[in-house]
Structures are given as C-alpha cells and as structure tokens.
Image (cartoon, rainbow, N blue to C red; front, side, top):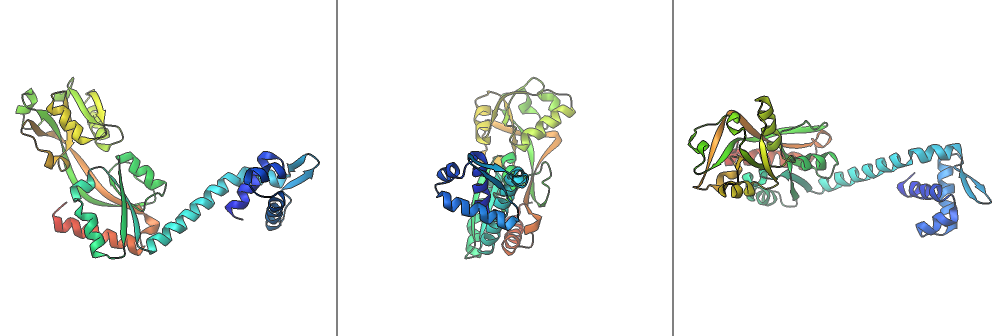
Length: 297
C-alpha cells in the first residue's frame, strides 16, 4: 500500500463514482479501476460494491476510509524521515536557532564548521523561541539552538552557555542610580519587552507573579534592538539579555542586574534517535570545541 493508492481510494469515496474520481485525479477510469482492484487484492477484501449509480463502500472500505487519513500522515512522515536520514548521511544539516544565539556565537561559527568539514553543509534559519520548538517537534530541522523552557520529549538537550538578564534604564530615570533592582521597583513602570514568543517574556512575567507585581507592558516586540531604541527615547524601561546587548552599548542607557537573578540558558537539542548519526555527532563535537576555544560558557 502506498500514498497514491490511498489518495485514489479517498477520492473514489468522496465522489462515490469511479468516473468522477478519475476526472478529478486526471487519470482514466480504467487506470483508476485497476488501481483500486490492486489495492483490494493486496488487502484481500472488497472495498466497494459497484452499483448502476456508482459505487458504495463495503464494511471493509468504510473501515479503511476512517483510517486512511492517519495512514497517509504516517506514510508521509515515514517518507520524510527516510529522506532526512539520507540527507544526513550525505552531509547536509538543517539548523534552526532562536534569535540571539548565533549573534553570540558569531557568523564564523557556521563558516568554520564548513571549512573544517568539507563536503558537509548547514542550512540555518532563525525564529522566535517558541517557533524553534514547534519546528523541531514537526521534524522540519535536525538540530536546534533554543532557550531553556518546556522540555521537548524525545530530544537530547546539551547546555551551551548562559547569560544574565538585566533591566535597561534610560539616563535620568530614578532607577538609573541603583546598583541592582528589585522587580517590585517596576510596579507601575511602563515596560517594553519582547513578546510572549520569547522565553525572556515568560521569565519576567513569572518573576513578577512570584513577587505579586503586575507589569505595565505597554509594547511587545520581536526585536531586542527596538527595546533599546524605545528605551533611549524614554518611552519606557526594558529587559535585555546581557550577552546579546554587549555590542549595543549606549552612554544614555544603563543595564542594571536584578536582585533576584534572571538567567537566559541556551541549549542545543536534537532527536534522540539521531544521536548516533555521524553528522549530528560531528556537529555536536564541533560546537562544544568552538565554545571552549571562544571562552563562551
């Protein structure tokens, strides 16, 4: 049984006519009838009863129709998994990363891997944190760089590095004179932070809830650079990942640590079933060596 057979079968079920189904599938009625008979022979059951007005499902056909969509999804997933295994064996890796991690690692991270391992290539895409998890769970990527959050079942998770999270304050604001801040200091303060698609948003809200503080979030963004820009314009305060904002220093802005530390934890993840794959292992080892050489921890 293959996907084509099931799709043909489904179309006949929908149309209740071989002729109409064949027209929709752009094949001849004879070819479709032959395909259905082949499927019936393979399963050793009659799927349809031929009538003067078309066809009707037998009890076997009804059962197969109820299961056909799940079977198609499983066949498609199986085909995709086999294709990914072939691509991995041929040295092609798909990497997705949350925004900021590759910025910290620097563009050299990708280039050096391809230089050190000729014949191996990486295709990479960056997403907000929650989208990375979604893409990995759907099997659209082989390896992910993500921020620690809800556990991904069936995945290996390897810690990469951490970064503290600080309050971003503009010059002249009363909090700018503090050496550290409590989240209670932000009660009623207009805040500009990254959206719910990012773990930093979830971490900040969780801290506020634990202290009984309701943050006044006036603007959510998908870009940390906009947080700096709007804070510089004195639209409100923000929170930033220290390592990401290192190259965005501004004399009119100040980063102040929280008394209750907020920590941004980066990790590399991949499916456990691919843990012994040669390309995955090579990339894993390269990544850890790169972090040690660059002093990133």
